[in-house]
Image 1 (cartoon, rainbow, N blue to C red):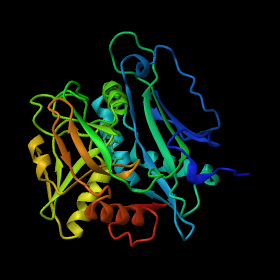
Image 2: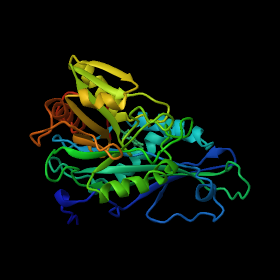
Image 3: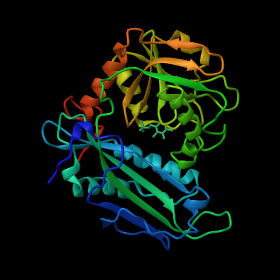
Image 4: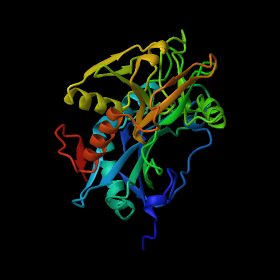
Length: 338
Ligand SMILES: *Cc1c(COP(=O)(O)O)cnc(C)c1O
């Protein structure tokens, strides 16, 4: 029945069999409903469509060598969705319901969980939207929580290669006291033009600076930034950065590998002092950074001069993927077997 070529799957949408849904109405969440409909039937005055009452999550399930399916730290995604929900005044989804929905959507779509060793995975997209009709600026009284799944191919089809990144100063993804720390669509809407221009100018990704002073590294569109020097893992700290679960995990791995870990402001000039740099997030785990070009000043910071990913980035990537695929002992207890 499956005729999917797992290796050449893009990071895109492929229809699967089922999605799961729960509705918040009259003060309570409904039991999970299973649907095979790809469409949502919502009121045209829904607050998600007008006032951005929307938040989402992204996570991956992997099939291990032992045949078991593992989901990486779903409780952390559940907590973050709760934070995002509160940030845009939505009804939070109980963490238990969140994890149950994720497990259920994986089981229902088990035939789409790629086999071990293809580098592919089943990507889950949980989302929470305000669906109550409202014309005045107000939070909705009704919400819909949906989790759908789609198989995605290996992120690095040509291998684990360094990428080119561009610093942008004429766009901000989030205001200093705004919604940058929440995983909400609005932050993405405000980053699309800069990301698209970056792609057209030959870069894989853009790096935003702090919106207030333009002095510190914030994050790279949909991924956090980190730098490595003197056996230290350095990652920016600011109110506007989305708390990446990959980054959180890399900090634990770094400490476990005997490195120092610093979460603090990272001035742009410090880019010149790192031995390695990378972007991290669920999609790629790690994208090793080969060079960072400051679009306005023209300054270029280079890392992997030989065109290969650095040693530390490679170690991180292999350890994290190894844990996610059940090849390396999960000493932190991050995996949930489905
Ligand atoms: C989702 C996301 C990340 C990565 O977070 P992970 O939990 O590691 O997937 C980084 N930055 C932004 C803005 C994001 O939305």
